Length: 128
Image (cartoon, rainbow, N blue to C red; front, side, top):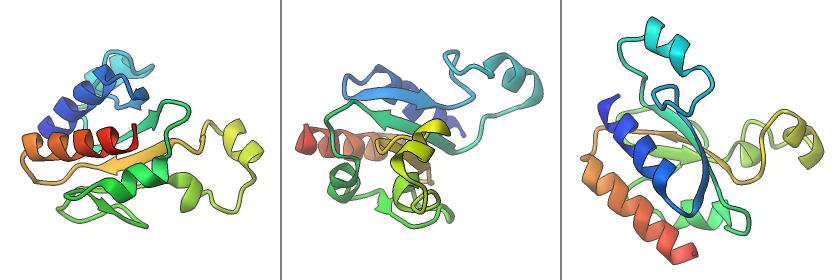
């Protein structure tokens, strides 16, 4: 949970990231509720790359974080809802549900935060 919060903060400041969804961030619409109800904010977050960046290429460029079809386990994994859980919906249906093709779901594992951030950074550089 602590690592996820640090990574969420790092992503929120990155110029190639459009939006971060994590209840432990003050920018999250439900932050006040989460702060009252939770002692930590969990290891799951989502983020969107800026328009023009290929989210699939980004996931394939990761070396430490595993591109996955589901999120679980102790290792960091990432997936695209547009390619997995919401694949059968049209782009318009996904958009109406707030799921654009650049949205990524990220399960933060037990790796060192510096290693995870370095992997995210090298992938963003590669696709940028």
